[in-house]
Image 1: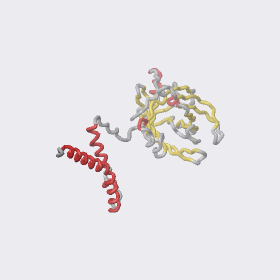
Image 2 (image 1 turned 180 degrees about the vertical axis):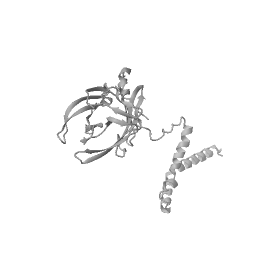
Image 3 (image 1 turned 30 degrees about the vertical axis):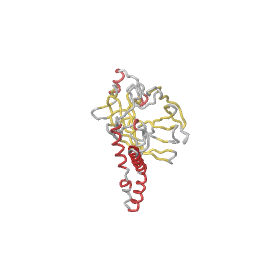
Image 4 (image 1 turned 60 degrees about the horizontal axis):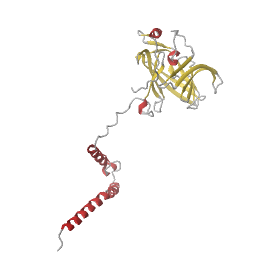
Length: 285
């Protein structure tokens, strides 16, 4: 998994005892509090609350979570409490879902969507390998989005911090950029790693779907056979394969022959030069 480390904040060992109690190995069930998302201290209380948050993270501290604050939903006029997440000019507002099973966006400056009960981060009681599917209504029902959340690693150590959480978040078929994501959160740090598996994602930001590109040759002796092989792949017989018609083959082969005339001219010029040199070498009587 190609993942980008996002923070450089430490958590004291004494603070982790409450996080250890959040997971029951016998039932493989974990209580996930809001503080795991905000990166704040957690007192072990299993009541979902919206504690004050003020977290800067990212490689250069360019990302920030703050709140909660009152906000009025444009579509319904409903007043709700939201967290604000800023990332280099991108603004997002997150609120607790009505089911109290996750945090989701109610505003994103990149999109003109107003969604109800989106789940971007799971909250409450979740089990190892559990998958939940959410049918999210946006823009007063004009748009519906299917979101699937799967717990991949419910309690593990990441970058030296125990009791981290990793989950898989997919929207629809996951083909568009940013719709097939793997997130990792750690106590006291919040988001520490993300991995984009969607097809539109840059290779550096997600898992490699193909092998590495072939190494470039170090010298021309290796490049020349490669050029020849490339040229061979472009011969008329390969080009014509989808169209096995005699007329097409005749036309394209003639065109291909015309493309070779620079080589023919070069050979003729070389023969002429040889003849001139030969004549000049004959003694005149």
